Image (tube, rainbow, N blue to C red; front, side, top):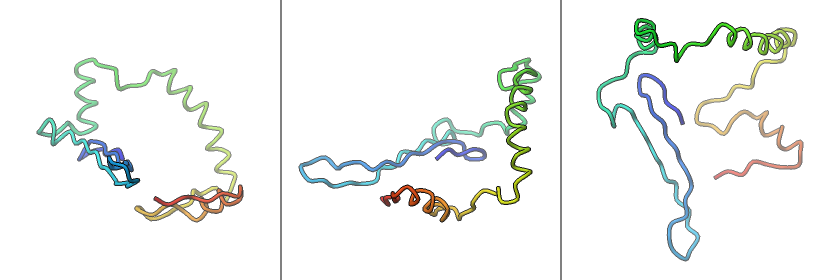
Length: 116
């Protein structure tokens, strides 16, 4: 899980075998929060960009040729989507395993999702 403002950080949850001779699996959570580690708050996104502009730091900015290359790649995809009425992505509630379409997709290959 990647968290962006206002609580920047990231987390990872893995299933780990508990040490010992038996097979016992336990979820392990790892969590990093900039605020907890470094204290204070980080600048807002546009605040950061404006500070970089004033300092002459172009690190977070794309060059014109990069922007044009990005648009030349994505424009045909956007045009195709606009031509299809049923191209809307499948929606599902946060915290669930995903939309029913994901189940149907994998089941069409003779497989199924394994739940943890």
